[in-house]
Image (tube, rainbow, N blue to C red; front, side, top):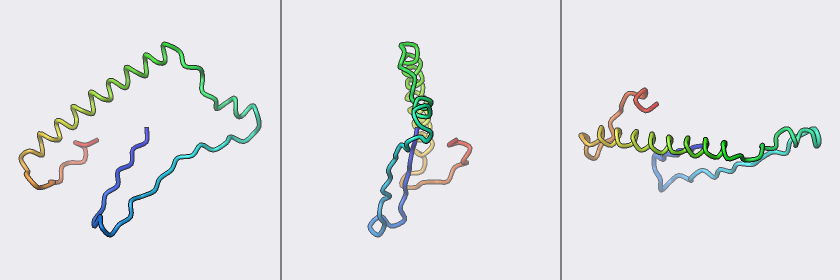
Length: 87
């Protein structure tokens, strides 16, 4: 997972980041290519991935709901909270 969050001080005067992700070719010939090739997808791997994705969605929505509840007492403000709360 790769998450990027960009903030601006003066959005009208700043340029958003232009990001790219590129896969580099492995060095060392065919053996190196075979070493980094992913294993075939199996039903067990797919099931495990879907279960972990469900946990991520449930956990993220619960976390954001807690944050929203905490922010309700601060209309039109973004108070500083303990960073450990957001970890």
